[in-house]
Each structure stands twice: as structure tokens, then as C-alpha cells.
Image (tube, rainbow, N blue to C red):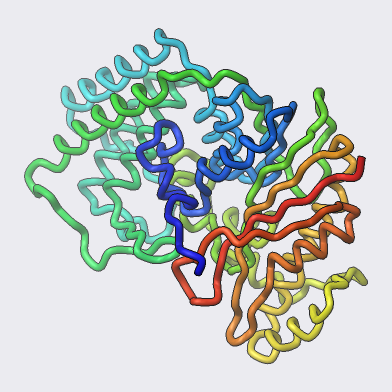
Length: 404
């Protein structure tokens, strides 16, 4: 019987240094990456074309393996770069001193009238007014004292993101995120002081976990994973990644508070645009555009694929198109990927199956078929764990090899 194995999920990363800097549900366990690399002692360069929060790259950096990471989301690219930097002792001291300066400046003066707030819709659902004001004060001081991008500013911004989500009304009792019924007020009369003290503590914890320096730099690129990444030196001889699952769970939803505060999103439409560009995206206009999307003659040759789409379409034509577009995008990814890999390169994809109404989508089997169609060999499927939702849903590790 396959167990849920929380140690194979993002939960395992909590409290493990840089891996736990932000809670991101789509992140997978560093333990899985270590287990894969332990079987491959002669790997020269790892590629992760769906980098997310950078787990693969950070594991590689700690093991001294060069890696290239690709993601389409600019916030995740920034976060992964920040997460994998080899900080000096002097820089970490500047981060701690910077936090103290920010807190002292806020304590020494009342809030100004020109504080900036992110244009996130229904912002009051996220933070009560008093909390919003403290966050705005910290962000104002952070930008004032550190006007240019630097590694020191980046670490302070990570601590700010931690504060943003900790003091929000966001709840993580579901697959992605929801809102608490009522705001929790630990102390109505001391919230600003508590938040400022908490910011100090977060910076202390952050700098402590940043002290162990990665052995190898990580190259992080913002790009579309459908297209082949440029060849590298040494050539990519291993791919370790986890693409978005076809489950209509928008990752933009969970990232919104960070992306709005840090300026990566300025209006709701931009979130939909980014989800439309991403594989498996389904936020806002990304859903409405499916009404007009057409496969333009492209098809998936997996046996039963057409019948599966018809069964989903009997309940929802849009969801049927969503599934079809998802797998056509992944086929494009696999077809373009081969030209960037060294002969004999090993591929490892962590994927989850899906269910729409009464129709199970065997993602792992379809992926295996797409890999074979793209010319990869020795495709194998290993069931990793039971997921926490419907009983039919599992996570799998697919492995394959590029022809020599």
C-alpha cells in the first residue's frame, strides 16, 4: 500500500535551512532530489525546466553540481536566485543591521500619509488595517534605505515576505490557500510592536540559515519551458523537475501576496496573463481564453486520450480543452528538450495524476507516452506516494534516458 509520505512533499523542507524560507505548496522534497542524485555519481550539469522555488538547484549547489534552472514566473526566478546565493559574513551582518535600522526608523516616527499599499483586490481580506499599515511602513523604510537591488536588500525582502504571509488571514487547510473566517488578533494593543519584533526575529533566523554557503553557483533563467533551453557547458546530462500538475490549481493564487507587494503584479489581469503563458495555468483570463483555444491540428497519440477528453467534455467543454492544451504543451516541451541534452542524459519528472468529475487522467502514463514519442528511451514509472485528496490520486517519479 502506497503511503502519503509527507517527507516527499514541501513539508519536509520546513525548518531545513534555505529550503524552508517560504511556504510554497508546489515545492517538492529535497529528499527526493538527494535520492536521485545519490544514484548518479558522475552527473556534470543538471537542468530543471520547471524550477519553482529552486529545490533542485539548491540541492545541486550543496552537492557541488552545476545546475541551470528555468521558470516563467519572475517572482520565483528572483526568489530562487536569492535562495541560492553564497552570502558573505559581511553581507549577513549588513542584513541584520539593516533590519535594526528599519525598526528604529519606524519606532521613531508616526506613519506618514503617503504609505504605498499593493493594489491587490479585497486587500482587507488579507490583512486588517493595522497590520497593513505596519507592513507598508516596513516596506517603505526598506525601499528608502536600500533603493538599489543588492543581495542584502534581497534577503530583507525575503524576511518581509515571511512577515506578509505570517500576519495575513491566509489559511492553508486546503490544497492551495483560503482565508480564515476571522482575523486572529494576538494582542490588539501591541500589534505594531509584535510585528516589528517578529521582523527582527525573522531576519535573525534567515541570516542564520543563509550562513552555510552553497558549493556551486546556480544559473537561474526566466523563460518558457516549452522551448528548448540553450545548450550548456558542460552539457545537460540530467533533468530533475516537477511540472505543474493538470489540476486547475493556479500557483499564482498562492504567490499573489508576495508578487503584489514586491511589484511583480500591478493588476489582476497580469496574473491571468502569466497563468495563460504557464503550462497548466488557470487564473482569470487564462480560463476564459480556453473558449477560443484550438489545437491547430496537433494531437496526442496516447490510446484513449480522445475518449478521455470526450468524457470530461460531457461535464465541461472548457475543462476538456484545459486538459488537451496541457498535454500538447508538455509534448512541445519534450520535443524541444532533446536538442539541449547530452547523449545518454537521464530524466526524472515528479508528476501527479488528476481527476475531473468521474474521469481519471493518468498523467504518469500519458507522460511516459509523450516521452517515448519525443524519442526518449527506457521510460519507467515509480509510484512515490499517496496524495492527501481523492483516493485515486498519487504522485509518481518518471525516469527516462536520452539516446546516446
